[in-house]
Image (cartoon, rainbow, N blue to C red; front, side, top):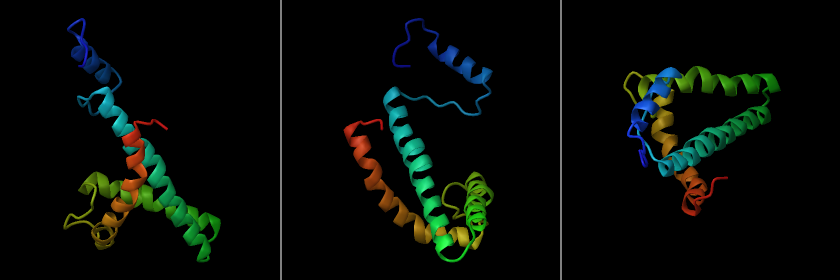
Length: 131
């Protein structure tokens, strides 16, 4: 706790987490939370992920998929494959038990996306902007 005037901030915070049935509680600071929100929620979750999904949808449409086929394929990849794989195998999917396409995607494509996304997120962090 950055400031703990009562001496009970940690206990009260943990009690709130338990009350709201949080599965995970990590110590952090306001500054770290801002950086986490900018990179995670805004940068990756709603920025990169939404953009990549839109790109996949548009590509499928250009290659003859109907709107519903393109939408279902895009959403299915995320909800039925990617999220499950990340939950089971960590973020790269490089576990020996991961399906071969996931392994290849992680090995071949992840570095490209990492390198492409970093310059997009970096200015927001450097400027301390919360946009």
